[in-house]
Length: 162
Image 1: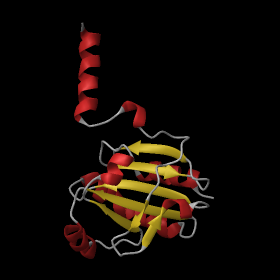
Image 2: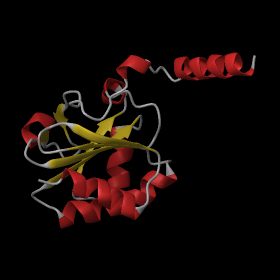
Image 3: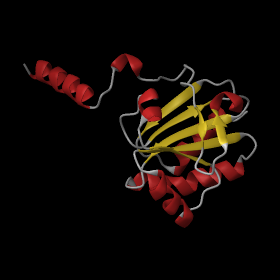
């Protein structure tokens, strides 16, 4: 009985989260296409970033661990500039709010607004933060759900550098 209830609860949670188990993006697969503009208006095409390591981070300004790790992503981006791209995709917040937020917290890496959650759904993101690590060949090597520490982010980043 307990196993049945656990399975039913898990299925219900996946349904409520809008998550299709078969659509979860896994390591060893290429990421979904991503072609858009960042908040500064510059074009962003994931396909054109092959040859570099790429970190895609889904975040919100109300997520404390997201805010804590954004400066670390900035450090990693600057340290490995030319070999690493960081793309931070904001989930569900309007562009007008983000522009003000970024004025107070400027970052060098690309920030993308996904107020309608189109990109978020395409990537199967159901938890914030979610971070994808993509190697120079354009293959996802790791997916991190939730918070990480400095050492964990540095190790995953090192693993995707050319």
